[in-house]
Image (cartoon, rainbow, N blue to C red; front, top):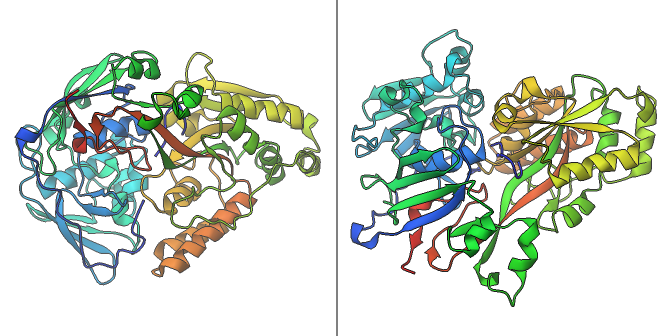
Length: 528
């Protein structure tokens, strides 16, 4: 999952079970509910699950819509709109049995045909989804719909109103986890046909979109007919770009805030008022610099390696981020299955960097073509980290790199067309599986492989890992692929993320997961 401004976008590794899922938490009596949760927010780029690919939009979409399955607190796929499912002996066919009490916000019941419609809509070339191939592409026939060769997904069959059969191209341990991504969420056919429909979405989630004032506020109201745990608050009010979040928190205008570097000393002061209100949650994410490996100068591996080892990541993590993040030398973040403690990264070495440039086909820094790096943002407000990286290249390699900013929506959804020789990007796990990083970002031809990196041996390892039934053997193959990507400088890993929050004492149950998404229907706001 791509992350918007600020940084950057998981699985039971083997789904050997014949039956999956569990029942949602019991519905809490209405008398126990109440209050308003006040949060800071940004405008979503879209609330259309079929096309959304950024973390900001997902933070709203996951409250308004649902899919067949969801991730539980252990980041395992469990039942949501699906009551349970069976998997064929060859691991390729999933038969989902839907709950019969799930309704859209307008009261219409959800049926298996709604999922078939939603997935075919997401794959329709006219929708121009950048996520459909990535998250639905394992299903037989999806490629034909995306290419315009078919209207229907051959691998999706409606058996009856509450039974959906899905056939994938090969047994894959992460398939159910892919279905927790918004691309697979159900939408209402009559709703999506209207203009600007996603500003008045008819979802199925624990909250309804009650108010949407761009650059002002978003209000979500509790859905009392929700099929899972009914929300414990009456509503959630997002203050959109309404001031400095820390100031709003201090004055009581919002109940939760993310803590950034300029306030970390204040909130970590044990004698201060905020120390007991702070929580830190590691994020399964990494920030990186990608290369356009199809064009000069980064079609030369020695140039990519030189730019990689000319950056002192430890200094950037310490000075720019006040040690709130961890320097990254690999692609897989700590905490994800397959994280490799023994991975050999490209370490900071200025002399070797200069030697690599001299040994490249360009013969040195003076012969490099002009280089520009693409980043997201407005008005010249470049991140301190990017400024630090560009300065390192200037001092250590004698290379001037121009920074080009483009607005977030164009950047996130059109990067392949917009990229320069380099681009700055972040990625948050969609599900805890190495495939979500290594395959999605670096396999030849993948939509999120923005630099069009291609390595036949890496592709072979990733494809073998995806279909290897033995968990440990599969993880070792992913580790081999990661080491090859690092050696080949497929990108410059910079930082692994960590989120710091201040939460008011009267707010209970606000617990973002390692992807930064909180189940807001579980939050309690006590009288205060």
